[in-house]
Structures are given as C-alpha cells and as structure tokens.
Length: 408
Image (cartoon, rainbow, N blue to C red; front, top):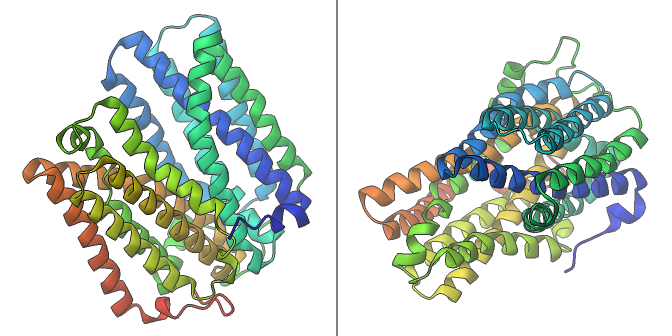
C-alpha cells in the first residue's frame, strides 16, 4: 500500500530530478509566502496581497500553452536548464531588493510575474521528460511520487518561509530559494539530451499551440482527462467558501479556516503516501471517473455536515481522491500521446490545473451569494457526480481504457 519507490531506486536520472524538483518546490513555496508577507508589510492591504496571485495566474495560463509548444520543438533538457537558471536569478533579485530595502510592490509584482513565466516554460518540459526516463508501468508510481513531493512542498514551504522571514528577514527566504534551485539545475545538467522524438504526425514543421489543441480535440480519451478534471475543479471547488462556512457552520475563526484549507492537502499527501496499489490498476480511465465522482461525493457530504472534525475528514477524502485522479490522468497523457505532443499536452494540463480552480472559486462564490453556501457546496458536489455520470455514459472508450493498450 505504501508508495512505490522503485523509480527512485532503479533510475538515477529520475532520482536526481525528483529530489531536485522537491527541494526547489519547497523553496518556491517559501518565496510565495515571503512575497505575500512583504507586500502586506508595505501596503497593509489584503487586496494588494491578492494581486500577487493574479500576477502569477496570467503568465501561467498564457505561457503554459506556449511553453508546451516550445518543449516539443527544442531540447527539453536545455529548456529546463535555461528556465531554472532564470528562476534562480529572479529569486536572487528578490533577495537583492529586500537587502536594499526596496519598498515597491511594483518591483515585487514584476519579479513574481517573470518567475511564473519561467515555471510555465519549465513545467511542460520537465513533465514530458519523465516517460523518456522510465518504463510505462512505472509512470503511475512516478506521478504519485511527484504528488508526494508537491504535498510536502505545499505544507513545509509556507511554514519555513514564515519562520525564516521572522528570524532573518525576507532576504533569507529568497536566498534559500535561490540556493534550493541548484538541486534542480544539477539534476537537469546530469540528464542526457532530450530532443523530442518523431511521433504521430511527425514534427517536421515547427510545433504550434494550435496544432496541439487540434490533436487533443481529435483524441477522445485524452480530451476526457481534462473534461473530468474540470468537472471537479469548476463545479465542486469549495475553498473560496471556507471563511464563510468556518463561522456559519462551525462557529470558528481564522484558525478554523486554516484547518479547512489544510484538510484537502493532508488528504492529498496521504493519497501519495499510500499509493503502492496505483501501478496495479489497468482500467485507468475508470479509475479517474471513480476518483472524480468520489471528490464530488466527499464535497457534497462536507456541505451537509455541521461537525468540524467530520467535515475535515470528508475534505481529506476529497484531497485523496484528487491525488488518485491526478496520477492516472497524467499517466494517460504520458503514455497515450506520442513524444512530440507531450510538451503541448502538459502545457494544457498546467493551464487546466491552474485555471480550473479559479473558475470554480468564481462559480462557488456567485452561487453562495445568490442562494447559500450550503447550496453552493452540496449542489456543486452533486453537479460533479452528474457530469461524471454523463461522461461514463457517452465516453465508453474512456471507461474501457486499458493501460496495457493505451489509445489516445
């Protein structure tokens, strides 16, 4: 039941890449916390802190698609090195600005936006390298390990960022982040050349975003991986309502909001820790649908309970289901798509992962204002289950998808 560490044990290149990504992601989360704290210290406004997220969101969406096309046209190893180097320099720039006592939120916003560009260009290249390093049967374990690293980074990074800022100032978090990137740079440097291979349609002309979207539109199984995730993230995303329900349902305060926000992350981390069985699942499309429906059911039940600890349990179950869905969706993208399309599909994956929850926040907040938070949460969970039922009814090839014979 525990996470399969075979890919780490058997493949040195993957082991270095996983370790480097884990360390650098913790550093990135430290920097995100430090920037938020610094913006608030300068302005005293939560609105300006919220703009930090917007400065990241737009570049991630725009350059996520473009970065995928670039990853299908150049040496992915070189692209990873260049963008990781850029992120390192930008973290050092944040440190320099803090040391120089630059009190301009505009400077911080600009650097954060450039960091998002580097991440958006780096992520598709890095993700599309994994199938070249491992065998197909090891990809579920590898994706579960990536999810584990992400969970550790999300939990440890902000905490460490707050601690270091409190002890030694903002520059300490930024300098540690810059140092942490060296682990990722070293892992990339040790990799062999990663030129995209000849795949379906052959990449004789320069790959384009439109070409990748056309490919995706004509591949029902791959397309359904994104539709199913959007069903969960757009229809049943309760996080924006946590401040309201903490007081209305549970009689709590900001600490209660923190517990509600942490519960899905804890569940996701547990889903990665107890992921040893993922590699034995062959009907991966069916597993995605069951996991997404489970997310919707857990969210709906959370909306019905008025006991805090029971609510936290169901949010944790939702987070665990999300990890299961993510692992199998990513595995399908990596195995069913040809190598010269993987970068662009990973770019779409990044955009959906980043943009879907924001649309879900808007929908949940609007529904709660029009009706009530309970209607938004319960109705969203039920709508997610209904959407998955329709997918299962009309996309029979996705239900019968078999990892031993992957068909896009």
